Length: 274
Image (tube, rainbow, N blue to C red; front, top):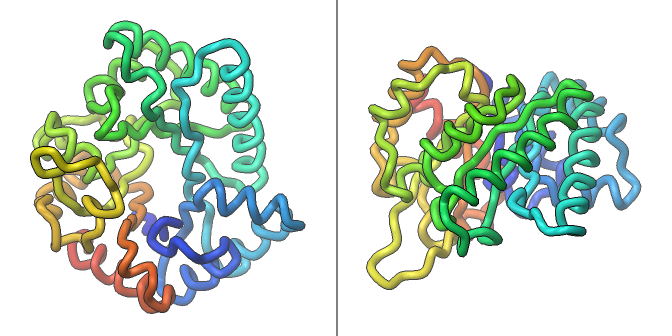
């Protein structure tokens, strides 16, 4: 098991500080947020310097999070998507990072499901082809409050794409909040399809409540409505032994000393995963 510090847990840190904190608090690797990473690179940093720093601490860059809005399919925006995919994939390769997270948001929610699946299949296939040139793979995250939001939809797209560098991230909150997936479903998965786990908690919105993640996900695992041990055990039962990323989406805790917070997050994850 590789325990990674998710960049949203230490939301206000830059990537250099996150790397030091991850090393000092006992993580094995990092899941860098794309906007922090691009900000670092756009302001004089280099992948060579960052990779040296990560390796020097005995860590690894486990995932880049994320290539977003992968539903873009209209002329012009599709080209922009593929340009962003190429840049992130090149960065991942430079950082010796095996995996990039990909996700769709609300741009195709108005379309019927068959068309949504067709667009996702076509776009993800083209993204995967870029990754094959660099030795990089992609984990699909389904987002609970979109129309591409179920485990079965992601599995169907993976089947259609048929490329070995496309798989899943098991995000406890998104799959729980959609309401269509249970730990029993996870337990039946082929572990080769699981590229990562987002270890997190939260709740579903109340009737009439907005899907505001800074409210619905502002829980340390064990504080929300998810049976964290059941989901953890389900993933482990598949035989998956890869990257577990501790993802805490808590504005209140973001105001803490992030080194203290990072230690609390990993100690919490260890209490469930061993």
